[in-house]
Length: 105
Image (cartoon, rainbow, N blue to C red):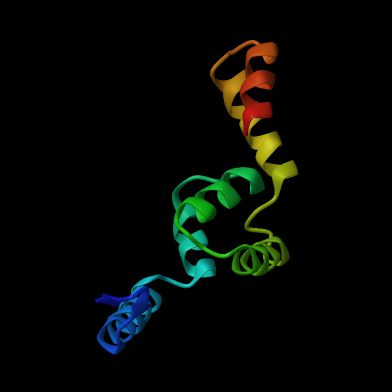
């Protein structure tokens, strides 16, 4: 409750409890990133965008990305090679169409 623009003690307690629940419920950034890239590889841009959408802090995202790079789980060069092979060679799509799609990623 607000009394003359000031929060009452009960409101502070509820706010602290809610923040603690959010912290407990959220997976660590690295764990969520692993889960997200597990099924399909992603570019660094795509992964960072998803982590931001999930509400992770930029410092946590940077730390998770460093770990993923060190493990070679996120590698834009390898992603590009795989994507081009899949789209152009296997599916027969024209290179200009694939290039445009790739630049969005």
